[in-house]
Each structure stands twice: as C-alpha cells, then as structure tokens.
Length: 388
Image 1 (tube, rainbow, N blue to C red):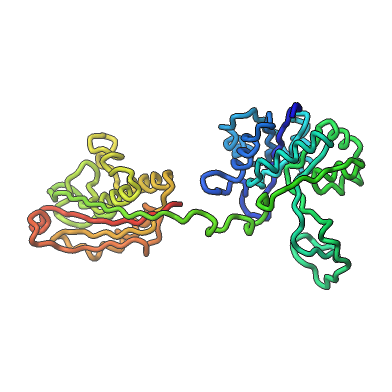
Image 2 (cartoon, rainbow, N blue to C red; image 1 turned 90 degrees about the vertical axis):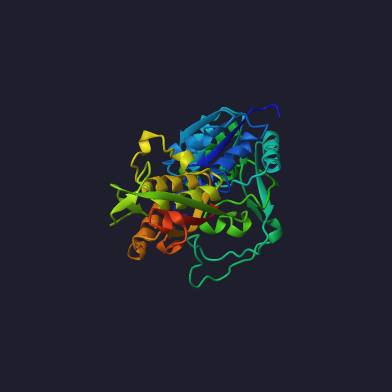
C-alpha cells in the first residue's frame, strides 16, 4: 500500500461499567492498552499512532513511552464519536484506522484486511457473523431486559454481522462526511462506520475475528483458568545472635523484657531476620546481608520490621506474592509464649499478610551449647510464595 496510514486508538473512556480503568488491566505482563498499541506498532502498514486520552493521560503517556513508531497524544471529547474525531483531525495519514483501545487481541490479518479494503473503497471494518438468534423488541436501556418485553420480529441471522475495530477510512472522505452531518443525523452515530452510512457512503465489511473482543465489563476479562497457573516456591531462613548485656531484646518487633539483648549491627531481631531470609530465598533474591549489609552505617540500629517491609516490596517488584510464613524461635530464656501473638501481628503487618497466615512458635534446645546455656537465640523460618 502506497498510502500513509495513521492508527487512532481511542483510550479516553471512563470505564464506568468496569469500576476501574480497564485499559490498565494486566493481561499477563502487559496492560490492555499496551497490547493494543503493540498490535499497531507491529503492523508494517501503520506509519504513526495517535492516542486519544482522557483523564488518564499520564497513564497513556507512560504506556506509549517505549513505542518504536511516532506517537501523538490528543485529548478526547465528551463522547466516543468526538474522541474519534479529535484523533482523526490530528492524524497525518491518508488512511486512518480508528480502533477501540479496549480491544487488545486484534490480530495482524484483521488490521491488514480492513486497511487494504479502505484504501480501495474508502471505508471498511472487520466483522464476524452473528452466532445467536437475534430478536427485536421494545427499546431498553442496553443493560437489562425491560418488563413485558414482547418480541416484534426475528431478523434473518444470515444477514447480521457484529462489527469490530479497527474501522478504517480514507481520511479526506471521513472529514467530508463530518462536514455533511447535521445535528439530527449526528445523534444517530453509534460507531465510526455510521458516519459514512448516514451520509450515503458505502462501507465494506472484511473478515474479523471472534477473539477480537472488546473489554467492557468485568465478565469480559480473561478468566483465571485462561491464565498461566501460578508458580509456587518455598524458602528457608535461619539466623542466630548472641545475648549480651546493654542491649534491648527485640523479637518479631516486640521489645521483650530481659536482662540481655541480642548483639548485631541492626536491632538484631533474629526472628524477623530469619523470616526475611526465607522470603528472599524462596524468590532466589539473595539474603538480607546482600540487601542490607552489616558494614553499611545506614543500617546501624535499624528497625528490622522496616527492613521486612522493604523485602515485601522487593518480592512484589519481582512478581511474587507471599502466601504464608512459619517460624520457630530457639532459646532457653526468656519465656516467649506471652509475646508470640504480638510477634505474629507485627510480622503479618510488615509482609502484608493476614495474621492467620503467620505462625510463630518457641522451643528450647538444652543440649545445644549456644542456645541451651542461655547464651543466644536462634530462629528458623519457612515461607511459601507464588507468582502474582
């Protein structure tokens, strides 16, 4: 095709039926919007991409930041039709492909067929035959079936097609049709093809794809069963510190009354350290010494629960979610049972878990010289994590 092509992606909707910005939904590593951008970025016929944004402009800019083709971002209008018009006016191509950004699964054959047909005939749109029997009845609100909804007619299903996007047009003809549209006809525009139909211009339908669905409501989102099964991993952590005079004894963020405390660069919270190592180990992300080295003055006397919150963030940044934690303290003295509920709450809060997902136990090992003689405290921890 010798004509230049601009892809106009309409991304200015408010997603009121979804309850959140559907364009930001993660489809497994890419958002809905990024998938839509990529489809036209990869199409060799497309020379530029025009993104029509609303209040989500900052998000749209971020999603388009690494696009390898020229990108314009223009403001949307009060309606879908006005937003499309703004995008077409900003486009520089001879042919414009107007696409709903909420259709992230559009394929290259669908895009190419519609563009080539529009270059020949002036207007084209992908479509698929309607599978269900259609009934016409009393006018409704588009959301529910009204009461006393009596069937009026049953159209011949073989003549019915569900139209998709991109809807492609000769840009000069599109602008000419806009100029011919009066106010009464403008109210009847339901999609971009309607503009051509209402001004007496022909529209050709090309082969669409049933997979080219539009995400409108939560029911349109991919089901969990369609996504890759989450990966699960288990990590183990162990830490031990010596008891010395002149230090506070901090375990699981709890200040335990005792005549001695644990020696260490930070607050020496042996329980929290073991849990952090278990979590990091499960994700193969090193250990606490790697992330918070004991020769760094920044961590001198550090609150280990604050470090634990940072570990939780690191896990999330790498695509992991902590499922549960099981930890055991080993010491002869002091008595820890009264403090365990508070330790569980502190650890649960630091790692963003419900309390019932954190287990803390305490036991003695009199036959081990280090802990058995009351010289130190050790902790074991096991953590289960899975992919987000």
